[in-house]
Length: 120
Image (cartoon, rainbow, N blue to C red; front, side):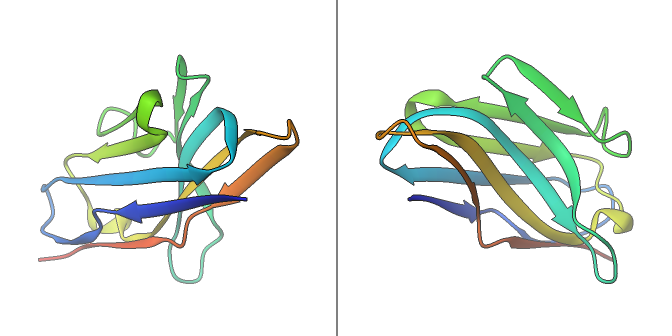
């Protein structure tokens, strides 16, 4: 099993910044993808940003130029730097990771979610 623990959410004013962190732990052989999703009230969960093999990144159009995803592979940790936040960024943000366990079985895990609220 792989556990993902997120931190860094909170309340911020429009135009402000937040940095989310997500640390993976467990019997991990390799993490291939780490990403962030979000779910606003009444909406489906959507991809925000993803890092593939630590080299390829992709972003939702709505956050391009404002958000940046990065990874610390030595610490099995992924970050999401969120700048110029807008009220429509308000949502619960979930970390997701996929790869191989020490047994070489594949895994895909979700974090518990962290609330981000952008409001004046």
